[in-house]
Length: 453
Ligand code: ADP
Ligand code: MG
Image (tube, rainbow, N blue to C red; front, side, top):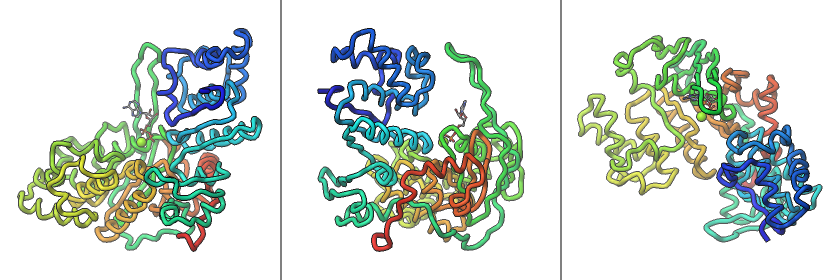
């Protein structure tokens, strides 16, 4: 049945493709296994399929190994493979979750086109309601192994009946219509001018050395109490900016003025007293928490290293745990005893322990479920208001950025291609790249009704 009656595509095509076989051979193998087509016709069929799924240069690609392809191209190869025998059912399990929005939009359009032309049934598994709005006719909502609600896409998205569906939909980040205003315009905490970072990757067996301008002449300022969003697709240089600001990597040029002082040329020793003022929150706090230390110890470490007495540090840590909405008993527990959302709260508590004036949050809610994501965003905003922190919020998700940011910088190939208020950027994008990016946001037409939210 596999391949002939039903075929499956996955989130990570790299792990589903055989790294040792050319992609052409993998597609023909499916046909061979089912003795479909004559051996001579198989290659032609594979080439036709590559063409059909929009892969460039099918003839060259046929003899290429998977690691040479981009994520979107690999997913197209998987789709070509799934279509080889024209099965009546395609099961797609989060096939676009690991892709950039513009690539995601292309793959969704491709699946819709195939469905229309081949009359295939598609079971599309996703956690993203925007994608649901984009692609589904009918929706089934699952909670803890049970289908709690089923109906047409219109009924489920606009008129959900089950409380779980209602909660989920209320938590979906949407493009905001209303401007976020800065509660209190604070002093400029960070001023970046003409920041440059170039990576030179060494020659390997397969590649020549490449020079990548990861950050190319980037300038911006952040005030206390303000959130600056840095958005863009993967590889656009967002994380590199974050690393430069924290001086985790050497920069190649430009100024980083922190509270008036240019720290670009500072040595590690000069930076040490400043370090506490700039903190970072990561995508996966688990990876940055020591699994063998209690949460309390992980949070206390920073303040103690900065001269606080253990007693004061402990007292403050207990306060912080409460502030981020965790039980004080968290102090004596270990990171593995917490959920993803709770761990992100721990990461925030740890960042706050040193009383920073600036926090750099790199994809810090990207791994969380929508309902948890909404809670963490809420927490960040209320803490920011109370503590007057400047936040640099790095994300690939424009919907999330529009929720939390006061201003947004759109990055493309190391450059800021557009800068402005979220509402201006989303309603009236100026650069071509931003237009494409905004166009590709899944489900942007769909607005949950007032009664739901
Ligand atoms: P983003 O966070 O927007 O996904 P990054 O800042 O991580 O992007 O990467 C920007 C560019 O720099 C990419 O082309 C990436 O491949 C490259 N890059 C990042 N880190 C390194 C490194 N340590 N060595 C070489 N190239 C790198
Ligand atoms: Mg990144």
